[in-house]
Image (cartoon, rainbow, N blue to C red; front, side, top):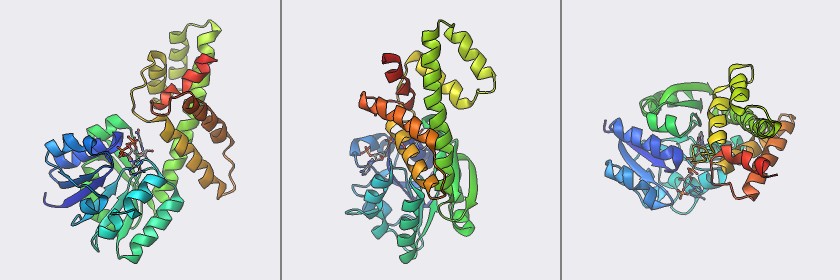
Length: 289
Ligand code: NAP
């Protein structure tokens, strides 16, 4: 495959996505603020660009997978940013979980340069990124999505087109609002179980098999029990998602009270030093009380 793709951001998710693009045979430019994280990809044949602009130059599809609005703004619009270097006719794919307001701003700046943008955040975590089994939630024009399908397919099991630009970002925040609240309530429930004198394994078996059971409850209860906080999803990123969800829902006069409370739990964990651990470590401050 001769198409030239750029991927900006080689964190937990971007690294796996980039590896699958290489595996599918795309010619790949990668950029990451911390250059050392690119080594494995360079060994796999990717070209390391020392700036976002260098990565974007000559690429027909430019994907970003960055922490938040601030990181995305920096990489697209900052010094040596990717947008200025993108060719007319290139497609920008913003896959980070960012606010719909930022997507609208970036899309409008891209359009002024004759460049189309898709917002395409993902569901799935580190393992799905590594296995090429993500689900893309896409906002943008149908015809634009068609042109990048082979690129997205190399990283995913499913591509859902939700509507115009911003639809993917909106859907992703609703998804993560429900996830964040469930993780926070699981942490409280498990801390309660542990102090109650109940058999923890039996209690969790009942919850997993019953109405509260979900893939998230199954996976995260195991991590909380084993206190395995190696990162699949950084705790600080879930805090960010809940904050963006609250801001977005407020535009529609929906007050996400449960998100406010859940975010409080994640912020307590940050205050105790867990911001760069997996989000399952949100239980620790409750255990320490
Ligand atoms: P991560 O491991 O923390 O990676 C974040 C990336 O953003 C890194 O490349 C980091 O560069 C870069 N970055 C942060 N601040 C920056 C700045 N100011 N300027 C330039 N680059 C900056 O996060 P991740 O887990 O890969 O997640 C990436 C995005 O996907 C996030 O929006 C997250 O919410 C979303 N997401 C994550 C998961 C998951 O399970 N992990 C699942 C779905 C969606 P450095 O390496 O230099 O720090």
